[in-house]
Image (tube, rainbow, N blue to C red; front, side):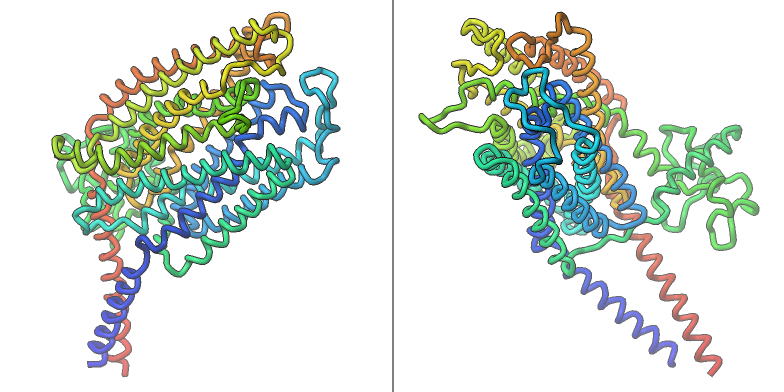
Length: 602
């Protein structure tokens, strides 16, 4: 009787816990989560957008060196998210990872602020940085600068992959029949909301940096980063906190090790032979798929008596894995070819440093006396992105869905591919604008005077920015949704990190291309990407990017065809729910057994 009462009490407590959990999450958590990443982006992009000018005029660097450092900073900032994603999904959990990332980012922005406050933290100011006699930064000064960049990259690596996935955790309700449409709108508007904040950063903050100097201009991002961390911690009690999968990282490695150990074994003649494969109870993945069949050997049972323990688990997880573990690794490997198509477009979207240098040598006045900061022209890219998201989500998706019978409207691949095509147009337009600007500068007698302001309006750069923003809206958001749909919820942070990881390779490739172009095309000290814009040929450089983008489009078509149809995320979600229910039942049965033993002893 006592045992029955205790079991009923445990059942009531379990039900109560589920009710409390169901009251968490939802739209009310979005202000805290979105503001955290948005303000972090405002701080980082507000610093990054104008940084080329800070390096040129305060650290006396040339254009190629400054651009290479920014490429590398961007690359590291995009590499760290994959590390943060694995730490989040397999060890810390998304909440703790974002929390630590916010603190580290605050330290990094504060350190960068100190380089502007302390005069000895940077080299002696040079009146004309275009001259070769300017004093370069010493080792200590460079180390302080690069350390601040590094801390910001580490903090960003913790926030970027987890923030959107953490937000999706609050909105993802698999039982809701409209869940797929809700998640699509979430991704669109989340990206757009962050974009609005970014637009603020490349206007207001850059204006402050231009008008009031670097001390005030770098101090504001420090304050915003502090506010970002504070708002995130304030919503702590409202969040749905998905626990990390402690076996994720080890599980992926175990599959590779087990497949290698069993490489000499022959696969079963019938792949549907359920007794040949190791799977957990109630798993939807009873047999592995036919793609990447070499990995199937990792979950192949050789001898049930020797391989399987009495509790149903493998005696040696490094020799025998579950079918689910194999499928998780397959999902990650299968997605890599399509992921790699984002490297070139990522490289293209990080070319704004050169556009800033061009805008700085053009007429930036609008409405008479109002002068736009050179770096603020990137606002048009963000504005285009936000406008497109609104039109696509509210007008195009419902319209297209009526004919395609798909709640998402266009497919993931169609949107990713369309973004790649528009990126080709963006670089082609940039090449023509650069050619025209150089022509006008030479005609005005500015060939040896790179500081001369040409009569050509900087508004000619707006079109390439708009096309770049549209390509990002299509390609980047399409990639995020695609990755999220192909992985289980326990790998959501990894899915979100893949976009940044591609951006890292894009930044590295961009730095490599700039250095190669600078070396190969240099004649008499002048290259295509010379710091003297009028002697250089930035138009040729942009045409080179256009060719690379066109080749990338055809490469994407091949990868999309080889990938085949997209997997259904519901398979992962339903199994994870089933696994959670099994764990709860096992805990309940263990407790019931304990109570029964106590009762019988009494």
